[in-house]
Length: 101
Image (cartoon, rainbow, N blue to C red):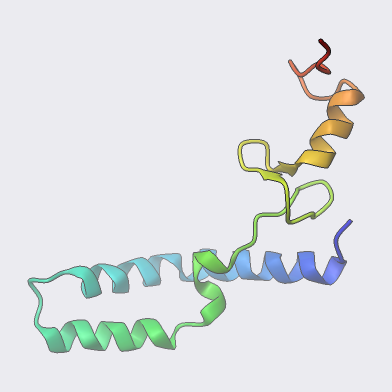
């Protein structure tokens, strides 16, 4: 189980990303549009730099929904390999059975 503070900090980053997503997308579109004048694109770059760092989507860490573990994460299931194995052993993951050969 991960520390509560680490999980909360990651949730705060997720909220900031969601809050600034539209503004960030608008500014990025201006920066990448080559038909606009260089001054306007530079101004958009400076405004983009003024946004909080934690509003960038790359700052979000994928964590297990059950335990908060950051490693061994399956995106499709949004949980770690350890939690997945425990739940599947208890028969709580539909369609998943323990392998034997």
